[in-house]
Length: 456
Image (cartoon, rainbow, N blue to C red):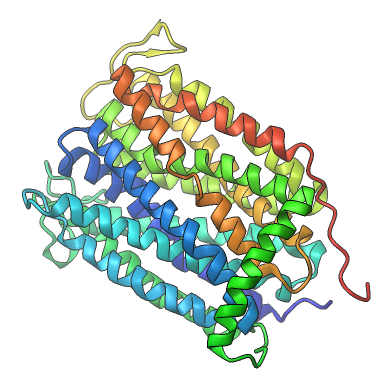
């Protein structure tokens, strides 16, 4: 199999760039901390509410993703489904603008819009991932996947620089991180710079998703009527589940992915909330933290893709999970005025960025998360693309999305319960060590040898 032309690959990787601001700005570094520290009654309650919204999105995805993946395989083309999923994502992102402080409906609006946008983004990603096997041969899947993740991280980095430098201002000073008045007359007191991240992410998606639709080839049409394809897709879904149960390595990998993706969802869902609640960080500290994490994420995704092709995706996944478990242990050991559980440290000086030792350690641990998260996710989709039956990637990537979301309420719920029980934001990461360890134990027995294609 010959790789697709360069402009086709360019169009594919640019979709990662187009989607990433939603995850960087809304899910993690700007809107989520704003929700927990401004809209919610307390950071701990905000963390719990955000977790419940994530769980609700996971339950919807558990029902939708594999069904839609099977239907897309039956019909053939994937790009129309990507476009259809982007429509509710755009609407939900724009809706976040109206989640203003002091409005009684702000909390439910923010949670519903976030959940809808999350579902739409993940559905689009399932069809987007299913294009990989028609673009490059198996030996280049790791590099393509890693390049996509790295490009996505770079898009997240560019978006957060724009938001912090020109749009989101500190309520105390009225200035952006670059010392400027916010563009478009955005009011810092009404937190309009935080709320603009939703519409900004939507406009970014519209602008940069176009190369995928213009340059990247789609799977050919099967010629089957749409309604017949729906019935066939549902029938094939049941068959896919049965086949996955009979194929030991697919079943084992999907179970592992279900567990460790739960932990990764929780890490990103609560990372910004943790920094805001534990250390009192505002938009400037959180934004710079996001920039630093995104830089390491970009480097990690590029490096991980090449390690994937050289060492195999299984080893990349295992190494990433081991490092994530160590990061969680480090987070548990931090407090506002101590590190390593009991070693006291001097408090930070007001007005100084990341001045205390616990803050510096937290930033270092965050950079390590960025370094390994990209390789973990890129290697996960690369491993599945290697082991699924040829020509049936859509329905199996639907199951991948299902396995990544089926129990996605568990890790956020465990973090919320640990936070409530101990009264400490730092206790939440303790439960995530178990998620990463169990996921690694399951992946350990999965061979990542590529399945032979017909005629090979």
